[in-house]
Length: 475
Image (cartoon, rainbow, N blue to C red; front, side, top):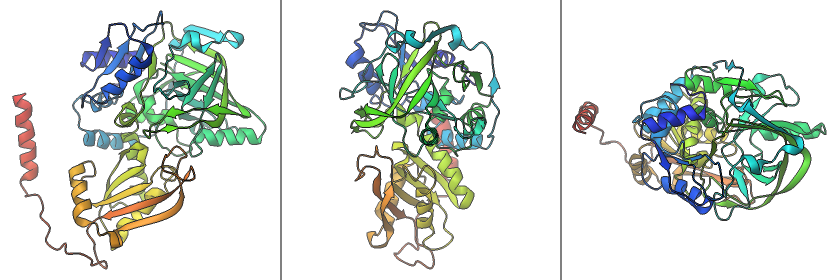
């Protein structure tokens, strides 16, 4: 099932027992973020949360942890609620092959029901804002989709970017925004500033669930997020035309903010508790001026908690990081079997591969670091054999413990790029990168004593299916 707006997805979550309505009165700080933080600590199957009785807000509807479990993630993709993580990633990869699916432009977007312009814009009157971590420098919009166009080629639909970037609310019509240099919006901004211009943007809040997945997904510069969303949804993504910028925005959003990133203007933004599980300090960042707000009557405000994993963001950007890396690597090295890039948006990646010859696994690891996403993220790569499931961490730990000889299986590459938010980088944005080769050596590499491996019995696969079927019938 494809969802056209957030509300229809919330109804499905509730019908599946995956939406918990918190009816008692709660404080905006710390209760909202603490509850979402707790959802990541109560085990697999955590529900989305709904709050509409918040101290100090007379008419707030706040939802959090919408993607915050594999059950919710499966439902977002229209899969059965119990679909395994590995099967979700494999289905994600299968649907990737359907790209592109052209979007469907629709009239009468629900977010067009109400508008504010110019001096009437006041984000504090529309949005129920609260801090996510107690050290945050302000209120953040951390689950928005930001739409921008290439100033040199604004009519190229594929070069229109839909991305997720942190946004600090700094005034009634002012935001601070951090455009990570490796991401498309930073390229758009650079081109605009070279021309001495502001960069128009649209910011959408409360989106249908697949757009939230795609907005954090590493894709080629000229690949359309809307066309990828259509492939993942199995139906065209509904879009509408934003009235001020003319940009294409999701049809079903709750709120649409339009304005500009003011060219060559920077102000202190931050600190913020980031997806790395650490605070990033205050830095000079771009300033966004909001000139028009369109919003649905009684809008639902969606936010996510970010902190030490696992939190909602890890479910949101896990599979959508694995699959692009898998596709890019497999296009050049068909021996690659699977990629697990679930950890901190791919700062650590586990790759299983067959080997053509000695040293082959290390070469695949180096290529992962030089993919478009790898340049800014892939810092540590663990290479394992094709019979090791990279999503099965006990198997990975076995490979690390039994197959790695530090004398020849560690490759330390100095002074490579990484995003500045990586707390271990020194200086910020520069790091050493590491390949750990936990594969079995093959000719002409003859190190070790791996000639007699113990493998699963031939009947194990059949018995696995039988036992799973018996357990399901007994529940």
